[in-house]
Image (cartoon, rainbow, N blue to C red; front, side):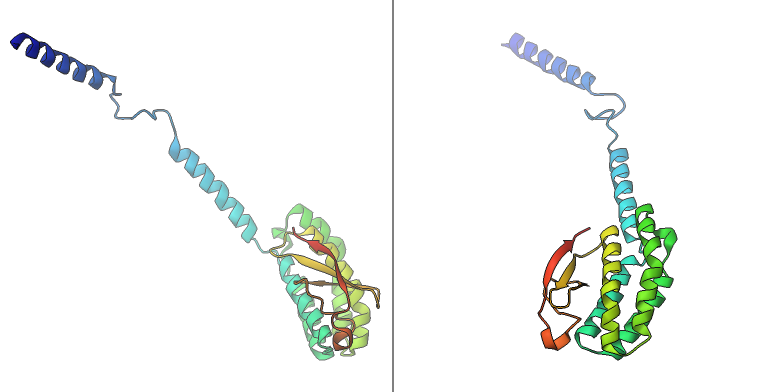
Length: 196
């Protein structure tokens, strides 16, 4: 019995010593050679760069907000407000930071910039709603071309009035016709949705 207890004790000590010699002497566990910090750091850095890039505001998306303000004034048949909002659009487009644009945005913006300024200046130059509405179709078509080329934070709806044969853009799918105002407020349809 003493012999079997002695053999068991020797086996236990040997097994314990063998297990201890299997562990790395540098204190690392079985994940030796894995560089978790570097992987996590690279992922975080990549995500941070992407977020920083998306935060870069060139001002192009803000132009849509100014455009919608003009459109909403025309929906209300408010020529004075449309004139003021168009002047604000001109100020905003002239203040755009082109150095923050991607190459694709810059290439889309450059040929449209002067057209959009001209469109907005013509709307701003008068308080006559009918004259403003006459200019608004070209303005809308130029804004549509720009909206298709930039990164948007929300959908843009291109809408069409079959009675007037004109287009406009909206931030919502519901039709509010800027060409007829309250006379034919819901005349029109969504013809395209931009989701860049």
